[in-house]
Amino acid sequence: MLSLKLLYNSPFSSLLTAWSRVRKKDPENCVTSALDDPELDSDPLRAEYVRSVPEAQLFKGVLLQGYLVPADVVEGMEDMDIRDDDVFVITYPKSGTTWTEEIVSLIYKGGDVSKVDKELLVYRVHHVEVGRPLGHLRFLRNLRSPRLLATHLPLPLLPRALREKPRCKIVYVMRNPKDTAVSYYHHHKMSTFLGNSTSSFDRFLQHFMAGHVVYGSWFDHVLPYWQFCKGHPNNVFFMTYEELKLDLRGMVLRLCDFLERPLSDEAVDAVVRHCTFESMKTNKMVNREQLPIADLFDMTKSKFMRKGIIGDWKNHFTPEQSSAFDDLCAARLADCDLPIVSEPQDAEALFEQFGRILYNHPEMQDSCSAPERTWSSDEDSDDPDPLVEFQPRFQSRRCFETFFQMYLQSDPVTLLS
Picture 1 (cartoon, one colour):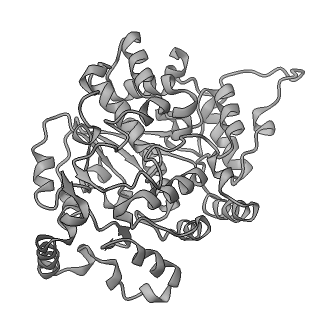
Picture 2 (cartoon, rainbow, N blue to C red):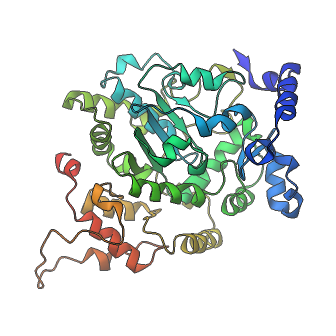
Picture 3 (cartoon, rainbow, N blue to C red):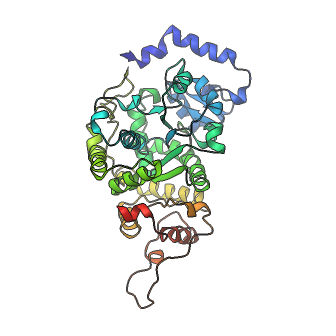
């Protein structure tokens, strides 16, 4: 088993790094050391974070980890060939990536758990930007179809063929930003490639809110993908971590439908049993306790799959931090119709009334022309109006009225679950 520190502290690694710097000619289209950013010292908060991440890299304004993200792979991503039967799982870090990868992998194995319970997930779903120092792009090209791929890259850094006219399937998973921040904080503490951070949660939250973290701002990552989904609803399935928590079986059915991989009821039940968060935590094929490279994670600092609950942010945020974060969300989401639900009871209320937190349907392409309500309401009814009773934070009433109109179009998969 290779050691991460030995691999990157070896003379061979130093030679590779030197060669990658020598061959670069166009700095705007090349990965550079984040420490060489001429504007770094003008922002002490950003400089502090960058210096805490070993070999941190910068590409087109996006901060990337140094370990296991080869520069030639990131630079060559633009021209990567995409196949029609590829499947991409895309997330901001700590948003349900591993969970969704295991579900998708098992769906493609026909729900047969015996085909996945002895093979590491990293050998079944391959991250496009994370891999071997040499030959990773060639390795991806040589994979058999259908390729199951994953990435944390922001939309502008995806392959051109994927951005401009996606013909394959893309599953994007969003998690509410408060819980994401908490999970990413613990991930920094345990991850060698992120420097095994010793900073306080308060300090990390400042970095997170400013977007000074690996893969950049949560908002700059999620919002473009949300718009991308609305423009390509047949090829992009946008779902949330909270939906997986509240209705795993229903989301498995929706994924089967989207991926055009129908399963029998028995197979769906097998996927659900295998992919509960509690089961995943103890599954060594997915929980990162067994990996081909040693010392990637310090499990004494935190577990890779930690709590998996909605609302863990309440155990970390002070009232002042929560208020500041709410203000940031209000500013960044003011003109957006994307619902963000960070309260467990709000997520449950949405599910109880509408069957989903988000809605995915071809009619959703234009959020400004939502379909008419398909149900009639008796003026004397005692039933509360959901547009009045449910007022999630951060959003304008206009956006949520449009959003709830979308819910009222029947979801064929909801009717089956």
